[in-house]
Amino acid sequence: MFNLVLFGPPGSGKGTQSITIASTYHLQHISTGDLLRDEVERQTALGVEAKKYMDQGLLVPDEVVIGMISSKIDESQDARGFIFDGFPRTKAQAEALDKLLEFKNTKIDLVLALDVPEAELIKRLVGRGASSGRSDDNEEVITKRIKEYHSKTEPVANYYDAHDKLERVKGDHSIEDTFKLLARHIEKYLLPA
Ligand code: B4P
Image (tube, rainbow, N blue to C red):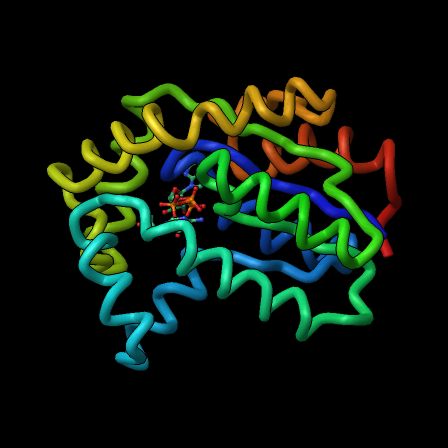
C-alpha cells in the first residue's frame, strides 16, 4: 500500500492535482473539502455544523473531520493506497491519521507540499469563486483562510519533515508541469497502474 498526503495552502492546486494523481496511480482520493461540501449540500447535521466554519474561512473542528476520514478509510478496504487531499490540516489531525493507519498496518509514505506565492493563490481562488460560486472564495474569506493556514496548518509540514517524509514542490507552474514535478517524487515509490 502507498499513502500520499498532498499538502499546501488554499488554492495551491491540491484538488486539481489529486484527481490526476489518483487516476494515474490508481489511488483512492480522499478530499476532506469535497466530503464536507457534500455534507453541506445534503444539509446533514454534520454539514450544517461545518458550514458555519467554512463560510468564515475557518477550519472545521478536528473531531468532525477525523470521524469523517475514519469511515471513508474503512469503506475502501481494497485500495492500492490513498491520496489525502486537504487532510491533515492540523497537528492533531496528523497524529490521528497516523493512529488510524497504524491500526490498518499501514502508514503515510510521502508528503508532497505545493509551494505557491500568496498573490497567485488569491488570484486563483478569486477566479474559482467567479466561476463556481463557492461561498468561501471571495477575497475577505480567502484572506482568512490563508491566515488560518499559516497559524494552524503550516506546522503540519514540520511534523512530517521531522519524520523525513516531506518533499517541497513548486506549484506555480502550469497544471501539467506541476504534475510532472509531483510524479517524479511519486515514482520513487510506485509506477502508473
Ligand atoms: P478545500 O476544499 O481543501 O480547498 P482549497 O484548499 O481551497 O483548494 P485546493 O488547494 O484544493 O485548490 P484547487 O486545486 O481547487 O478546503 C475548503 C474548506 O473546507 C477549508 O477552508 C475548511 O473550512 C474546510 N476543510 C477542508 N478540509 C479540512 C480539514 N482537514 N480540517 C478542517 N477543515 C477542513 O485550485 C484552486 C484554483 O486554482 C482552481 O480554480 C484551479 O483550477 C486553479 N489552479 C490549480 N492549479 C493551477 C495551476 N497550476 N495554474 C493555474 N491555476 C491553477
